[in-house]
Length: 403
Image 1: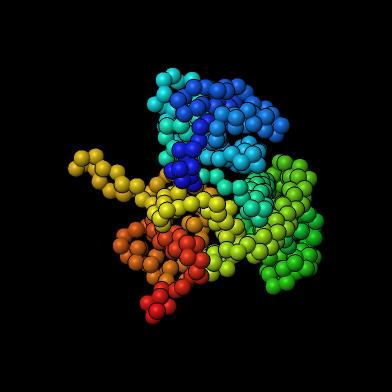
Image 2: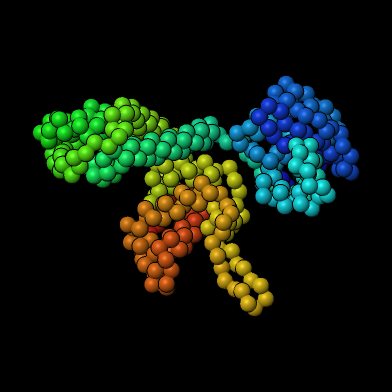
C-alpha cells in the first residue's frame, strides 16, 4: 500500500465503504474496533463531506473502498479533496477475508464492516489509489466506449451474416468475410437483396464497388454475380431481409465511423502523454495497446517485474500436492484487460526478429501457439517494467549485447 509505516500508524479512524449506485454503506471504526458510524450514505458530495468532517474530529481518517472506479469515483475524489488517505481492497481479497468472518449473509452493511475491519487489522491487503490525471481519466472513458463499440460491431456483423446465410448461403460466403470494408456496406445499402443485386448486373455492381474499392471492386462484383447464379430458388423471408439488411449495413457503417473518430481522439491523448515514446518504442505496441497500458498501469506501484506480471495474469502458477501432482499452469486471475493487451501485443510483435526468435524457441521446446505467446508476453512484461522504471526506450537484443 502507498502508506509509510508512520503514515499508517497515525491513522485513528478506518472507514469501510461498500459503494453502490444510489447510496453507499459506510462503517467507521477506531483503532480499538469501536464503531463510530454504521449507516447508509447517499452518493452525494455534501453528505460525504459532512461525514468525513465529523470523523476527522477523532483523528486522521483512512477511507477504503471495494470499487475505485465508476460508482466509487466520487467518494475517492471527495476524500482526496478533504485530505483523507484512500485505499482499495480488491474484490477477490475481500471475498476470501469475508469467508473468515462468521455468517453467510451478503449485505452492504456486512461488506462495509469487513472492509473497515480489514483496513484496521490487515493493512498489507490494501492497494493504493492515486487520482488519475486528466489524460488518463479521458483515456479510460474513451477506451471503455471503444470496447462498447467493438462489441456492437461484432453483434451487428453477426446479424448481417446470419440473415445472408438464411436467405442465400453462397452470397454470404462472398460478402460475409468482407463486411469490414466500406464498399461492401455501401453495396448492401443500395442493393440489399439477392434479387436487387441480380437485377443490377455485374457491371453496375462493379461501378458501385470501385468507388470505395478501386483495386478489388471488379473482382468482388464478379464473385458476387457468380454466387448469385448458384441459387435459383427464393427462400421465405428474403423480402423482409431486404428491408432489414440496408438498415443493419447503415448501422454497422456508423459504428465503424464512430470507432475511427474515437481512435483519433485516443491517438491524440496517447501522443501527448509523457510515456508515449517509451511505450511505442516496443515492437507490437500501437496506439490502442499504448492506451490500454496507460489506463491499466499508470498510477499503480509494482515492486518488481514479477508483481507486474502477476497483476497482468501472465505469471505461471505452481500447483503441487505432495509428490503426485507437479507443474506450472497459466494463471486465471489478474487484470483481464491488461492481459489481453499484452497477449495481442506479443502476437503483433512476431514480426520483430528478437520476439520471433524467442517464440520459435518456445515452439521448439514443445509449447503450443498460445503457450508460446503467453511466454513471450511474460518476457515482454519484464522488459516493459524495466522501461517504465528507468524511463528508457526499447533496445533490441542485438544492441544490448553490443553495448
